[in-house]
Each structure stands twice: as structure tokens, then as C-alpha cells.
Image (cartoon, rainbow, N blue to C red):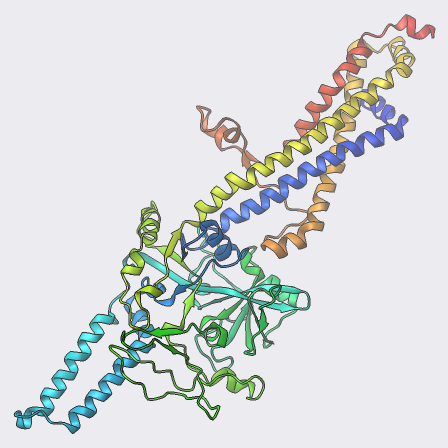
Length: 589
């Protein structure tokens, strides 16, 4: 006698009751699978993505978690901005020299030098005879050396000795198409050249089409753009497309569309990270948009009212002033760079708008945060623990030489955070408790479904006493009858579990596009809950053998033994009742 076939026929005989029991169990298992998979895949992606080629985030003081979510995952609004000079504090002498020479303060130094040369040529020094030109030259050289030394142009940033990679980013704008919007991240090409996707394998960004934008090129000028794979697919962007970005959150009443176009020069290959749903633009071009120019104040002459410096200021005739002759004020002046005319919408040819511009002086620049990778000669990440408190206490601001156009009161307090630590705390204090609550509720559904198996089998016992007595008369032993009842319970539970597993992953596939659009994390039917070290999770770092502590398996696999144990637990009472059934009495009915 095949006990499995008998149990299966018994389940089929009570078709409607068995089907309802299976559906009840399937609902519970479906919820368990969905919770385990979605939470596991997203949390695993969040935790792994924080090791994204940098170990410190530097940003404006405020919520450390908000800074992490905004800068790493593009999920919240920026706290505030930092002066561009903060970024230069982490750069080497080559980058600092290039950037500082593109400043109002340095242009003021050049203008002062030209004025000194004119004065020296027109007004000989009395009493020196033929040595007046030599004396003037020595004076000019001494003054210039003193000013260059004060600005520290030829020196690395104060924190450069701790730095391997420093990359600035600027957030706040969006790219909108129809009813969808994607974050815009302004950065430089170091973002794609120096950041890594997988620290262990040293995987870098790859381009499905096109290339990375350059600082300046003949195709896009300063206005090149690189599109994440998900953004390109959803917005149907392709190489050569010209796009406009929206200032601020599109849902805000104050948001508006910028009139400066960016040119798509590259599309990233899928990375499975939040960068897939972002539009990256060249930071140099981003600064040249009117609303992104930070006004500066010249406070060098305390006896006079502060003067606002507008690089796009126009004269009475409505024409751009260009590079007006600056008046020397203390150590600097308010010269605006040449060719920095205000954009005029569609009145100028698009190519001229793209190419006929010059970089914005650093005093007019701001950044949202700095992605910082400390020195690689630090295997224990001691610098990652040492720098954040020092930066938070103001050492970053105090390390800079501030020009009259960056007075002390314009300095913005900075903070530095460890993104891995912030995400770990976020999951420990907020996400994990919610996951356990959801798991508790779904397990309760499974228990209730198990009880329905118990009720279904037990209620049928009064109708099956004769059936059991016949089996006993045909030679079935008491243990075999008991096994048949337990098998019936296990079949109901496993059938519901299989249906629930399929339903849970089908739910994942249905929610996948939404999850990916919101978090950048791909989720599909064949995504499983990440492996977990079971014994370490249950017993901690106890004295168990290392092999057991390192044994890891997906929590979904544990559903199978869990359902079998639940089925045995709820089926044991009907099985014992069948075991004790009186044959003589049942056959007499």
C-alpha cells in the first residue's frame, strides 16, 4: 500500500476544503518571501554601495543620515552647500594652482601687478638714477611673491596628505520629462575615472554608448552630460540629445526650467546601483547657469558698504559689461571673466551658447558634498575614524586662507561622516525593526494557515473513521495510518508553500520597476533573499565550529523545513486520533 498515494487521494477527495487551506498557506508564504527578498536585496545593495570607492562624505552640517542618503543614494534633498574652497583643501598642488588662478582674488592680484607696472614706468624712484627700473622690478616681484604665498597657490591642500581621491558633487536640480523626474548630479570626470563599483574586484564605470564628458570639448563645450542606464531607458535618451534641467524639485512652486541646454555625450552601462537613475552633467557648465552662481561680497573696505558682485551684470544699454576695469580694493578686486555674457534664451545660436563661455571664478561656486577616499596606506581605516571629528570641529575651515570675497562670516560649518556606518545604524534602528514586525505578522499568517490545516483534517475525522477502519482491516498498521495523516498535512503545507513562493517572486517582479525607479536597485522574479550566516545570526560569535559560523544560506531555503515542521505540529493531533481509532466500533457504523 502506497501511503503517499493514499494521502494525495485524501487531499483530492476534499477538493474545496483543501484548496482553501492551500490558498491560506500560500498567502502567508507569499508575504514571507516578499518581505525577505525585497528587504534583503535592497539592504544588501545599500550596504555594498556605500563602499563605492570612498569612505568619507564631507558636507554641510546637519543630519548625517540625510547627507548620506542624498549624496550616496540620491534619495533626499541636500542639507546646504559648502564653499568650493573646501574641496580644494583636499587637492594636490596642481589642481589647487589651476583652480585658484581662476578666482577673483587672483585676478585682483594680476590687476594690482599691472597697475604697479604702469606706475613704475611713469614715476621713477627719486635718487636711484639708472637703478629705478631694477628697484621697481624687485618691488613688484616681492609683492607678488608675498601675495602668492598668502594664497598658497603653489602648495597642496591642508588635508591632501590624508587624501587619495576627492570628488565634488553638486545636487538640487532635476531632469523632467512628461510626468517623471530624475536627479541631476553635477561633478567632474574623476567621478567616472576614479570611483569604483566593486572595491574587491576594482570594477569601474563602463559606457554602453559614447564617452565621458571632458572639462571642455568642441562638441558640447562645458555642457556635456552622461546618463545612467535606467534614466536613459525610461526617458528614452540617446547620444546627441539636447536636454534642459529644472531648477529645484519639479513639485515645488519655485522650480523653473533653465534655458541652458546640455548635450548627451555618453550613456552608462547598467551598474545595479543608484547611479543608474541619475543624469550626470559637467560641473563647469552647471556653474555657468544663472541660478547656480553664488553672489559674493567684497568686505575688504570696512568703511564702505559691501558691494554685491554679479558676473552677469549689464550696463545701462543692456549689454554685458564683460571684463570691466576693476577697482583695487585691499588684496582683491571684483573682476568678472571675459566672454561671460548672460544667456539670452533662444536669441543666440545653440553652439555659441555651448562654446562661447569661460569657467566661473571659484568665489561664485558651491558644492553639496565631497566624496573622499583617504590614503590607501591605511589598511585599518584609522584616517576614516580620525578625520570626521576634526572636520566637524572646524579644522577644515580654519585651514583655508580666506580672501576678502570669502570673509570669515561666510564660512559654512562642515561635517564628515562614514557612509557605511550611517547606513548600518539606519538599518539597525529603523529598517530591521520594521522587517521583524512584518516577518512576525507574516509568520502569524502562516501559523493561522497551519491551524486551518488542523481544523480541516480534524473536522473530517468523524467522516473518516470508517475509512480508517477499512484500511486497518486490510492490513494497515496503526503507525502507517498515523503517517498517512501526517503526510496529508505536509502535502497541504508544501503545496501552499510552493504556490506562495511563486506568488512572492511574482510580486517581486511586479514591484521591481517601481523599486528600481525609486532606489536604483534591480528586483525581478529570480532575485532571492541574500545568503545569511544562519548559526552566527542565531547564536552570535559563540564557541561553535568555524564551519558552522560561516555556513550561509538564503532564508528562503529555510521555509521548506519550517513548513514541514509546522505541518507535523498541526497534524500530530489528528494523526494520534487516527492512531487510537477503534476498528470494531468504526466498522459497525
